[in-house]
Length: 495
Ligand code: SF4
Image 1 (tube, helix red, strand yellow):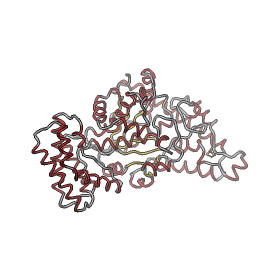
Image 2 (tube, protein in one colour; image 1 turned 90 degrees about the vertical axis):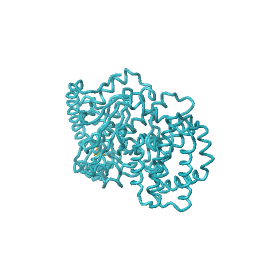
Image 3 (cartoon, rainbow, N blue to C red; image 1 turned 30 degrees about the vertical axis):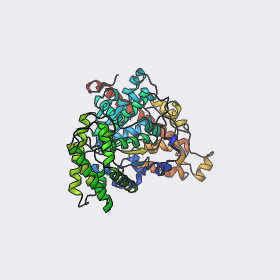
Image 4 (cartoon, rainbow, N blue to C red; image 1 turned 180 degrees about the horizontal axis):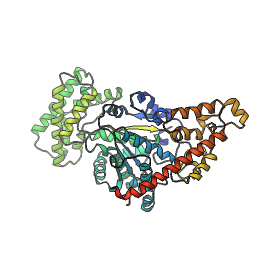
């Protein structure tokens, strides 16, 4: 997969998940699985195959500390069984004690996919009803629509000041024709991702398909850029050599002198002043960042950029405060260097919060496999036979499963002899992703019987089709119950 195949608005298939691990630093979920209490069946069965930085979330779960899970849905059509994976992931995190958030990404649907507001209104409620029917608790969780959420809009604006066009161009392949609203929808999405941390930093997981990874990389980067502190926590986290310590000391002395001696210069002057006084410390910062990079840590950058723009007096004051705060941390630990990275980060975050900053933790993500379409190829909202909508009539669901492609052999005889190819079978996926529910034994039985040649496709599909019809019937009953209660809930889903 080259960079272009990870297009969050495209329809490409990720042919080789493995490359994601190497190219983009997504880690295998198996490695973190033992740290997760009561892992969800999608985790146990490898449907959730990758993660970025999920450990803090698992740790919060184990320690009963606050954490959050959030996902956005673009209401481009009916919710289908592929969306159910994400609904399940959000609901499961809620049941594990997390703050759960689900949002309707209407701005993104409008700007990136060109949906009209009427179309969006039509589908938005359908997503919410399915989410509720599958077990989301609206009293404990948060549901919102992007365009209605003022806090998200404000945060998006702030985040937008940290991103620029060349960067979006590099990440998303934007070009001169990309409209401004599309770019605005990107920063809005970044704000969604960080929204759970507005009332305080906490580990936050975003369950996504691998095609959404560019958003995660940008969100993690922006979270880091909103930090006041960078050098201190980085520095405290490894054994800096004597030269680096000296350079850093110079940097702090220079900044202190700056804060004391320069009587609120205009920002252009301030930037010049820093450039003149901090040539060596800039090198020190680079070497710190390089070391962090080597150690696989996110480099966190201090907000010197404040001074590169026409910042207001208020922004300037904030910077001075930040310098003071950062220096306090530094002074306490310069001689000891006895903090590990997490401790140093926590300390720096606290100082940042004390100074009116956000203290965002870089958001984590988990990645699930795409479901194969029932007709082979990718499951797609625009090809009705390829997917089962959560709104499909149970009989239609039954029929779709009955006419699905299988991993079966051309004759029953050959199947008995060689066994079926469950790993390539969309019907087996239905069992593993949905129909077996929490029952691992059942999923395993289907698999073993298939590859062992004991199971033939006709009967296997019949069983799957019946289970699917039952599931749809049950799901739709629950949707109806929620439909009656929707008015009582305080969610306004119309635009
Ligand atoms: Fe797929 Fe079932 Fe046939 Fe195996 S027996 S290939 S799981 S339909």
